[in-house]
Image (cartoon, rainbow, N blue to C red):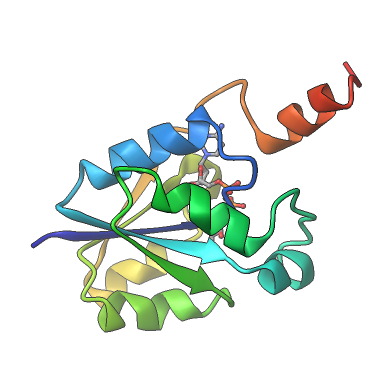
Length: 132
Ligand code: C2G
């Protein structure tokens, strides 16, 4: 079984996220999502999320492309995760291009997928509050 992993916050889940998950899953037979914890978002990613970890997890669990969800609590955990979960492919949007090439040394294929343009959690939040 070819196992794929990706990581992210997935706040206010939108079709850009879904397209990423769909393409990631298509690269193997099983997709694990490392979902950024509330603490990791706040302390390391300096992201204030609209939804809590539990809410974001609930939404991802409803996505047919997602087979398993694990918490993302540190930048460093990827190196262990790829061995712990016997991962073949690491996938993430190309806004991260180059940042995770080191995982190739762990025997993992690293794939950067094109981000979906014109959609982001920030844009949604801004439009929600009517700040055009
Ligand atoms: N994404 C996308 N198109 C968008 C928005 C997001 O393809 N319009 C992708 C991102 O590239 C990422 C995934 O969807 O692969 C999740 O996006 P975020 O929640 O913004 O993830 P990020 O904060 O970049 O966290 O350790 C890695 C980090 O946790 C990644």
